[in-house]
Image 1 (cartoon, one colour):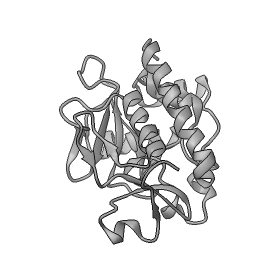
Image 2 (tube, helix red, strand yellow):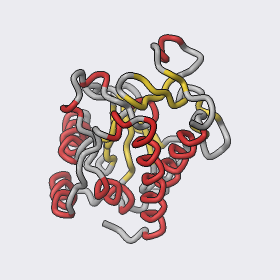
Image 3 (cartoon, helix red, strand yellow):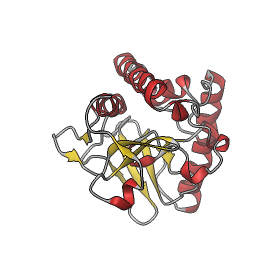
Length: 217
């Protein structure tokens, strides 16, 4: 699955911080994290789509095989642990989503859609698994009506760096900040009845009764 040891170590450290915060402040979200995916599971998913996972994405799945949407009473309102209120797909969900993108939408191979809002097939996050590309291993966004694009441009956010920023935003109770220093006002962490979500604090429709974080908790 690759040999990015430094990137894997940084990803594990970042996710440890995220999960520690969830256990204390959003236990409902922490409870939805699935057990680790085994090496055989990751290998089978890669074989099913014919794409080797970047080392960092594989390492993340070794920690948790995504989020268990089926354990929530209302899947549409499952706690959105990741920015935009999106959740990490289990491996089998990633495989299904990938096949939809490549077979039905005729999207380029190697773009691994690993997150979306439960039941939403319009938008989500991906990790670039196209070896040799400058965006390899980095974050991007997919959309039915806008194609696939690294996020932020031009080459996307390295997965460990993105998770490190998520951890910092949670710990400090502030919006996400892109590598160039731009504040993502639409992505401030908040707590609602399902646990952690991300909102635009300026928009009452986005907040919908959630407690918006404003400083460390």
